[in-house]
Image (cartoon, rainbow, N blue to C red; front, side, top):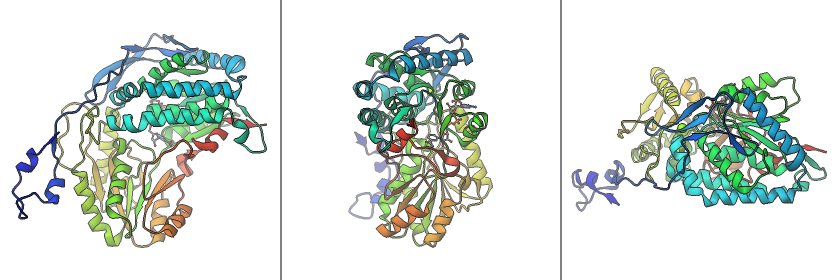
Length: 503
Ligand code: NAP
Ligand code: MG
């Protein structure tokens, strides 16, 4: 229950002795702690998952996965070397040749449905594990990550017996073994985006999660065992960049799928040039969220907040640039700041938390450095005066105004809760500024005019354009980038096409 301590401290309003809305929303109400208490059922140590079994790494080495909310050790994770990656590919190849690759789609579908339902059954436990390992607020892992991951398995289970309709007039066949590497911002959801279409199509998988967030993949391995998937259909090798490079470069991989930074994506592409591996790359972004003067202002403020502060801004398609129409710029910014002051930053396991912990010490250092660059370059910084927990990795929601396109905060992906605000006068100027980036993953448009939405969605060079909303996802919608945001699509029929050959 909220207590009104902070309101009591304020002077009485001129109006009927009640606090004005400005006073109420200008400050935080004190909430009692409301931690989620479900048991995440974690093991103290996780081995590699190869051939349907948990196996110790051949090096005998383990590293710690940390809870970024309080810097405590959560579990030990195995470090896979090249020999372990070899073993994982051998298991995947065997499964492809002997069971999974030959199985009728309608049979594969049963396993995918089973995985989706098992994940739903243990949803609360997975949400808590995701939050403890990665730092995202429990209300996001509970209401978004886990249900959306289950939805991807359901959706692709539905495709598995209808693959004749993926490419009308053509037949499709699986590629073989696919190697997949994923980042730390949506660990379980990225795993679902990668595994579900690959399996539906009849491929087998070797996947490496990010080093700071391997726990939910390894818990998912338990579901794979419970679902009775043939051994080797899915294999998880945990570790650092060296493990990732071994997964991407392995000769057995018929296709590699990578989600992560543009920098590492380029390294992988260079290393695979000249091979016949198929590739999809889901890389970085620097999206513009564009607000016209006829937009529903309060809705747009919420959309901008959701676009950049969702998951601490650890979102490739985050609306990290706000382009606001000049006539409303001042009013819009004032409303935005008032709303930001009410965001709760703190313990991610608390159900009231809006902004949780930054995923790692390294990422916190990167955000801090780039924000310092913004200040040095002369942008005007706003941060609310909220208190941060004494331990753990936290960063206040930050807004830079007075930004121009030459500022680094307007060009570089910060991957944190940092918004850069620019203004525009005409539609053409908005398009020009939005497209003036090396990336092209997503964009948002806020306006009352349908014709303007259609025009903007044609002109904006971005894989997704949201209109009067932001960060909405659905397994049926393909997701992917233009330019340095990558190539290939995940989700929908298009996503399946990236996991098959046409015969
Ligand atoms: P990252 O540093 O590129 O790492 C991504 C993954 O690649 C991690 O598993 C990482 O392992 C591994 N890796 C590192 N070096 C490698 C190498 N040489 N060869 C193969 N794998 C290697 O990215 P991140 O910092 O984890 O994630 C943030 C980035 O991902 C952002 O740029 C974001 O925009 C992007 N992202 C894009 C999408 C999309 O759909 N377009 C979605 C989510 C995130 P370690 O963890 O052990 O370093
Ligand atoms: Mg962790």
